[in-house]
Amino acid sequence: MTLQASSYSSIVEPRKRFDGGTLGQTRAIRPMADTIICHRGDCICLQGDPARWYYSVDSGMVVRYAIRPDGRRQILDLLLPGDIFGFTVCSDYGFSAEAMMDGTTVWRVSFQHVDSLSRSDSQFANGVRNAAVASLLRLEEHLLVMGRVTAPSKVGSFLIEASNRFGNQSPEVCLPISRYDIADYLAISVETVSRALGNLKHRGGIELTGPREVKIIDRDMLEAG
Amino acid sequence: MTLQASSYSSIVEPRKRFDGGTLGQTRAIRPMADTIICHRGDCICLQGDPARWYYSVDSGMVVRYAIRPDGRRQILDLLLPGDIFGFTVCSDYGFSAEAMMDGTTVWRVSFQHVDSLSRSDSQFANGVRNAAVASLLRLEEHLLVMGRVTAPSKVGSFLIEASNRFGNQSPEVCLPISRYDIADYLAISVETVSRALGNLKHRGGIELTGPREVKIIDRDMLEAG
DNA sequence: CGCGGCATTGACTCATTTCAAAGGTGGTGG
DNA sequence: CCACCACCTTTGAAATGAGTCAATGCCGCG
Image (cartoon, rainbow over all chains, first blue to last red; front, side):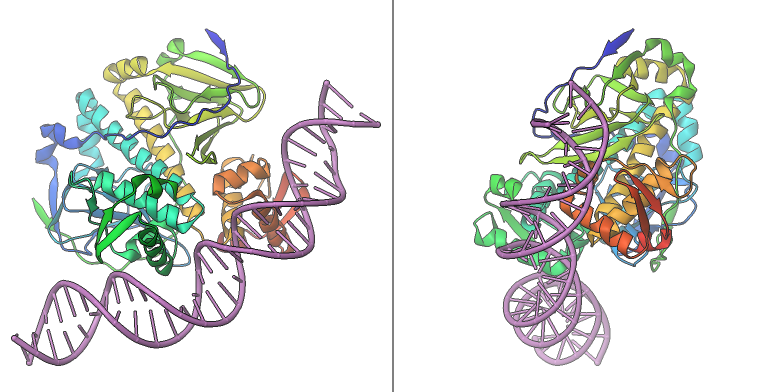
């Protein structure tokens, strides 16, 4: 069958939220996993190391980042319980990952075990694929945030994203990470992050109840920038 | 088994190139696919439409992009023959895709068919996963390029990436896309793209043999910015 | 020939980076 | 319990780089 594509004009629709699949749903993988217990700052895997394991965050929070040739750090992803990382088709990891807080626990499963179970359990294989796709969608969202023009709009949409992902159901408060991490996530300088937060506060979009606590007042304004 | 993560200092390693998996290796999916033949600018799928199909580029080139609330276009990915797109875990696509040149052909396979074949053919399932991972790695690379500080370094690393992906083995010449597309890929303005190219030319990093033909002279300088 | 899309260039404005310094905060050990 | 320290946060001032507006040039094509 052969179709002919038509020329549509673009319709502007807001992007939808998404839920990723987790490996945890399939218990069969559990016995094959090592459990890694981390302190804040502990390295879980290192850019350039041979890629042999998938990782699944069990508790705490993990940051995935790459170091550029010039030494700057680019945060690629922030991982929460249920999130999987380690996807690659190269022989080496293209990123590092480290724990963001004490008590972060991560499971580690070898590619071989995952591939082997994937062969016999297609539902598990489906879960792995969905985890990769969830990671992909987070990256797309990240790209869209980074592609915004002004710093306040970048920080604003980061806060929205953060409250959607990290917000413990509490609709108005989210517990962010350090300004340095936000800066490396958005690829702007720390000072600009601080000034952007001040700007959003001044315009009534947020309240800064503490250095690490932000209360979202005007969601629409944050999305708009 | 329980491990304890150690605190490494970051080692700076350049990220490696990667090869994605393709669906084409498995012929069994072929009969289930529609073939779409496109003119330049034809829409292949639309942001907000219900997500039902995977797409595989067979010839030509496809651009995948999202439109922001403010109307600006962010190019998410440029797809070449062998590349797969359409990955999502939402009910709707979060992006649009359109052909970049006349004669672009794309296969379209429904999620049901892919899932069904994935259940019975684990090697095929593996190929689908690898295609998602390849897409993920392209996005990471894209993120790293966009996260660079100056426009010349963004454009320079885009040219490197383009010559790696689009360069037909010819080591020095790459056939880029329009300045507008580069601008929307890097989230900078067209004028800035033009000036950045002028800058790189002036500093001896590239030669502009024609408006659409760039010759890479000094690869290291482009990577450095 | 003239049109539309693409590319370049200039001038101006303003946001962000950079450099510098000063306040805060939390944790550790005395 | 306090003092110190490392790290985080904010703020200021200066310089530069990018966005914007505007105009011109450049093809390819009908």
